[in-house]
Each structure stands twice: as structure tokens, then as C-alpha cells.
Image (cartoon, rainbow, N blue to C red; front, side):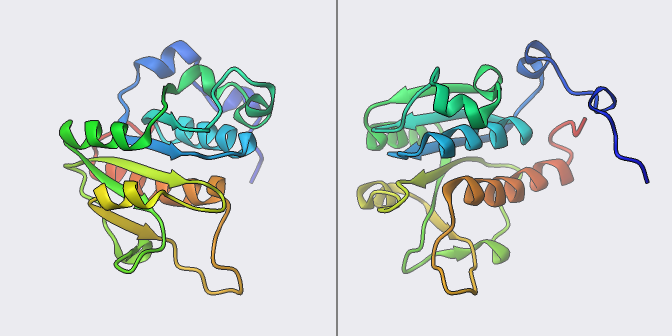
Amino acid sequence: MRKLANDELNRKTVDEYKKVPKIPVVVVMDNVRSMHNIGSVFRTCDAFLIQTIYLCGITATPPHREIHKTALGATDSVHWEYYENTLELIKKLKTDGYTLCAVEQTDSSNMLNNYTPSAFRKYAIIFGHEIYGVNQQVIDECDLSIEIPQLGTKHSLNIAVSAGIVLWEFFKIYVNEGKTVYQ
């Protein structure tokens, strides 16, 4: 086994990336305050061919030095938009045919390990504020909530970690169903 050099990874240029078909998933960041989390989510969305990131409320927008530290250029490749009001955005996404999915602990959460997304649906995955989570008014409009099972002493994960876990599970469905090009 030999570690590959960077030039052996065959990474796309930003222009090539923008032309590649994306999976029918968008990310909504509902009042996320940490710019490091925002940058990390951009990188994850780049890796998994996410269509769009919607930055809402107090969520900072590029260009910003603190976002760039963790995004490492993904703000140039991933399409993003800013909305002041998360509730208005998700109502629009619902009208556009997206299944709205809050990543949140609710009284009717679907445990991620027991939930299988459909490769024939469009999803809007909503991540909330680091302390307060997804706003209850936003949850009220959602079709479902997904919870990441946790068995330790803590009851939450960092948003960047949660995004990596959840988006990977959705990405796998589209790759396994042949709905996207893996390379």
C-alpha cells in the first residue's frame, strides 16, 4: 500500500466541478454562528456534490477569512445563496418539491441508521444553531427529522461533524442507485 500524491488524486478544477451533475440535495444552515463550521460544511458539500448551500439568518457568508480557513476554496466551487429568513426559504423549497429534513432531536426523530433516503426525491437538509438547534417554527414546516444515534455522555455533535455524517448517508444512496458519477 502506498499513499497517493496530490497530483495522483485527479481532482476537478473549479470550472470542471461546476459542470458535474450534483445530487438533488441542498443544505440549509439555520442561524449557524461558527464560521469554522460554515467553512467545514462547504468542504463537505464540495466532496459530496451537494447542489446548493443556503446560509440563513446570522449565518456568515463568504468571502470571510474565518470561513476560508476551513473551506479551503470550496466557497468558490459550491453554489451558495443567502436568505435572511429561514422560514421563507424552506416554504419556497417545499413548493419546489423538496422533502424538508431537520437534523434535530425531536419527539418523532428518525434515527439515521434506520432511515433510508429515496434516490427519487429531492431533499433539503437543515442544520441549526450550535446551541439552540433548528428553530421550532422551521421544524414545524419539515417533513421529517433525522437524529444521529449517540451512545456516550454527550447529546450533540458539532455541526460540521453532523453534516459529514448525514450528507455521506444521502450521497451513498445516489451513488449506489447510479444517479451520480462517482469520479
